[in-house]
Length: 196
Image (cartoon, rainbow, N blue to C red; front, side):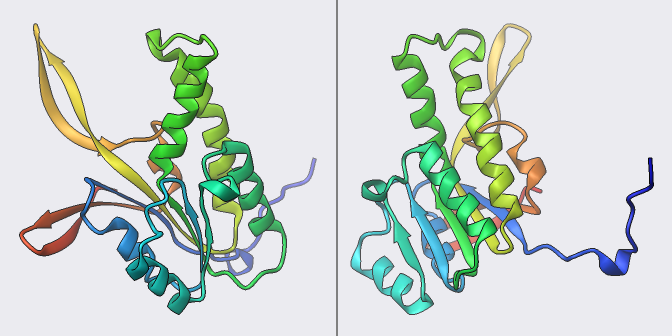
């Protein structure tokens, strides 16, 4: 067996991939539309208002919504595979929101009779999530994954306490990504807190 390490000067630098999580209305989608030439995968049909469409046109992007299969894990993964393996003019991948895609898969699993007990239905959403993220990371493009925010509860003795806020998606997704920002709104000012 031969050693496969290469010189650091031969390592191809990767484009940044990161996550935005936050409550509704904190500017996640609007921020994502500022990136160059996005391939915008809109699972919620939230980027169909005029101000969003105008920004998408100005940035040279394209739109993939529910009518084009954005709520189907397999179809979105196929699109990411295509973006990772073919020549195209797009520079940024946006998945808005991953939470909708993930939770839809959980709902479908429960509809097939897979119990939510002990996280069984969540496991049904984890496998396609891992495959999707592998192709997302392989694409030679910048990438943004937008997620909803949810509360993290912990048990302290006999009580459940609100410990933190986290993103709504499969656990450990943040390990794959370079940066995780939690968006917030204070009055009319939007900002992001670095979570990773």
